[in-house]
Length: 109
Length: 325
Image (tube, rainbow over all chains, first blue to last red):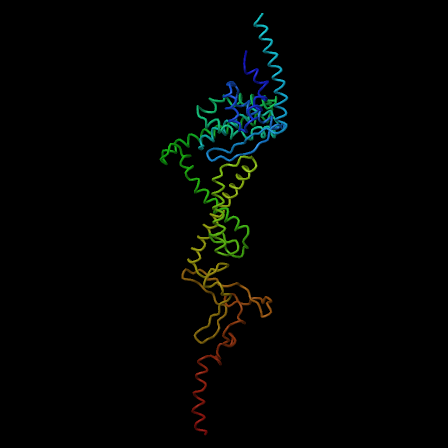
């Protein structure tokens, strides 16, 4: 089974989750996702997801000038983003526990 | 981040943009707005070129548009995309040519690439840009009666000019140190401004150059004074008197080469400022306004009030008065 297929469904949630505690810019968010274990996540997917979440009004953004290198656009969760994170998180947890049960039963059988 | 990294990013972004040709232009621009900065971060990480790390631009574009919630990724095979593809091919060829020139010209300047040398000149460009900006502001503000010179004398005041110059240069350096603007509009604005200043500089350079040449020619032939200030610029008419103090009319003046010497304006005005028709060719244009009246030019035989006549007059009178007394 290909993890990238699974990832497509939950990347929004993953991005919202890594922004819960700390704001971040695109490449920084990608690094956090990879550090958390989502090694397969693609750069373009994260960039595109950020743009979409921002356009859907779940994220705020601000630019931070940088001495070495380009200016960075930071993204932060806003109220709508937090609400989305909470509700989607519940859906995922329910789904995950069902899958876990299913797999456990299969294992017993 | 050096120039070559910027080139690589620009080429890659362009590739992604082409692959997203199916999207409406506004959507695409919005989607790619931050991509250069983002790719700069990827590149700063090291570990190979963008192509090696992210795959071909088309694949990146497909993943990007899918995750951003757009589906129209296949470019339409219309006239527009053919034109775009041709333009992209030309751009790529120009890019290649520039890069190879960059590498070949580098060693002549003592660097691996010519762009490395040019990057060192950036602060010098900032100073020049500040000067040009101050000059263009002064040019737009000053009244065109007084010449501007080489300082931005907006109000004709030297101190204000130096202040404006300092302000322009400091502002330009500040702008340069801030780096390239992020948002597309300020970036476009900056490009437009740079284009304007370069155009202004080129025009200004040729103006100053031809003015310098004109000045030189002026000293070469004094007397040819339509509008240029010079020793004869105040002269409106020429009056020539002969040895007897008689005003000559219809005089023609020539220099050593037989070139006619033209001084003043061919024209004549009376005391009320009405034009008087010129009757004689040559100087003076206005015989009636001669500064020394030596009698009518036509009656040349009787210099009654001339200096010779005045000295001759009392001498016969004195001896004749003595005997009669």
